[in-house]
Amino acid sequence: MSVDEAVFDELIHFPARLRICGLLRSADAVAFRQLEAALELPASQLSRHLKAMTEVGYVSITKSASPERGDARRVAWVSLTPAGRQALERHMAALTLIAQGHEVPTGQGG
Image 1 (spheres, rainbow, N blue to C red):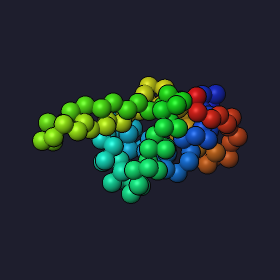
Image 2: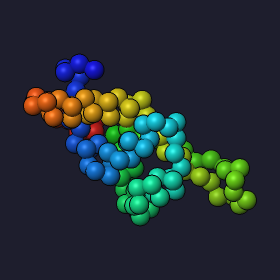
Image 3: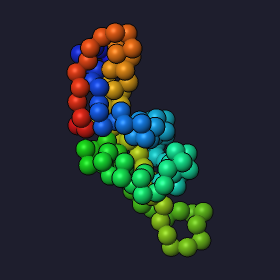
Image 4: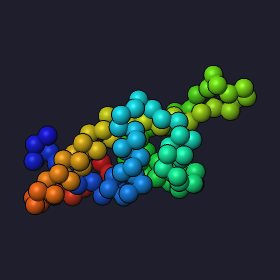
């Protein structure tokens, strides 16, 4: 990624959101409960962060039946959208440049 493409994203940089992106980066989708456990966040806090990221198009949430469950409850699956992946990559490039002493533009969610 070039210097011109690097953008520090204030929405992603919030610690919990950066951790969410890191967990989602290498997966097609992660179950909400798995994120909750891995991040050690209450469901309400995780939901707020996911809502903020969904509103700008960085994350998508789908619900589906789970073959492991014996009841009718559905599992919420969370994934980074292509826009979310691009924003994360641009943010990571910005962090690298900042660590090298360069200035980078700042953006927020989209």
